[in-house]
Length: 495
Length: 124
Image 1 (cartoon, each protein chain N blue to C red):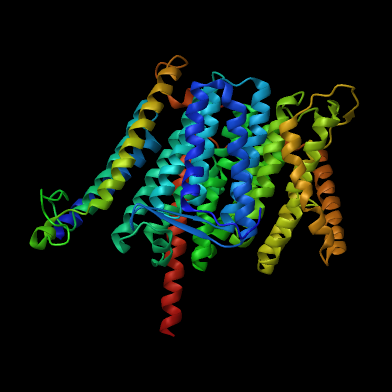
Image 2 (cartoon, rainbow over the protein chains, first blue to last red; image 1 turned 90 degrees about the vertical axis):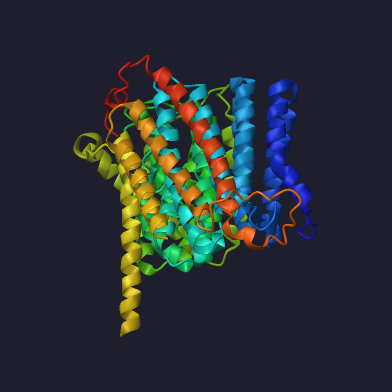
């Protein structure tokens, strides 16, 4: 699509409404499921590419000055592309699982709510769309629930709604001080309680650090397709507003960056010790979301590469012979499952020339030396995490279980290869990648020798009081950080 | 203005009480009720926010010209927070209903709804 092609606001609003209309049409006429789902996913992905190539932002203000404000810009383009592709991949797999019409309705409503949340630039439209995302994700979790699944879904909605109540308090305080609900109004306020409340809500939604403690168990216990949706796109609905706020005010980025790095460290640490394969993937999501929110310059690409890889991994998890990592090396996997596994794992670990490598390079180039070294150490940790999954032997069989959705999601990871190879520092990047791989492999072997499950017992962090306490602690931490930086500024001004 | 400050303080205390209840209660049903207390405090905060400019409902009298309200506009409440919170009330109600439906399902596992009986036993 050419970038000069203009897009009227009517078309944009029509595109935003289409998934909802399609959802209810599908519920009434199941014959239409495949074409309507395909149309909506593809139009979302194409619009994302258009926004990326266009490079301009298209602001849209509906219903007056205090109404809904939307903006289609390159940053949102990454997330739209991700949502379109992941919903398509999940749709393919769900089709083979034979989902009923309620499932399709929920999937389309989820896509519609995600689209609105990616575009909205005011606190209230974002609140409404995030709540619709949460409710549809909750119903999807509940739909195919095991007896235990009800508790997981309830916990998810309870924590998410508490976080959103705190977010609303923040929004009210923003309005009280500036008379507007727009992101710009929040970014211009001096840091304080309003910002802390809004950040607690958004960090919980994006599954970062202690606010994201709900994530590992929820993503691990859900059915494969729902896990792929949750880990692939639903968490990024909370990350994009954080990136937008960081874009508007550098001080907010300085506030979030330590939380993101701490999240990455926590996720890697737990993923190294867990004994369950899906739980490992979920803890790795918590780590990667921490990296996504580090910087608005690389956040979009980071979210795209991670979302595609993780959704593919979760989709292929349905065909794995078992979930326990004990004896993983004794259970052979067919090539059709090995391919998405290796591609996804290598991309998340940031090895050239996959998409994750480009994202990580972009992220590293914008960081100070201290955090950059921490990031390199975390990459070695990521290699050691995924070495646990890639250890399964290969099995040749004439009719392997083909997982089309996972293959579809894994292939775009290769599209970054020409860009990576054409870059000037390709050879040094390759050498660094190989060194990371080697060190990560050694770490993996060392941990295996140690007998990790018995020696490295970490505290269990995913009970309900931990989740809610995490929210309170991060909120208090943010307030303290803002107060100290304000006091520093006053002292510096005084001298 | 002092009254508004006092009410603001009371509302924030109600929100805090809701959060504390959510954290400390062991019964699942009481936890959801505590979440509702938190939600109601948020609603009250928005209503209070709207009342800063006046207490009368912001509805135009029949035949009045919006551009020329004169003194009547002085004591009208701010319609924006009221409109916003109406949406949030509806969302809060639906979430509450969904949570209660799941709780009735969970009551088959443990009729006492003690949170501990749903938590996992194994390590991370």
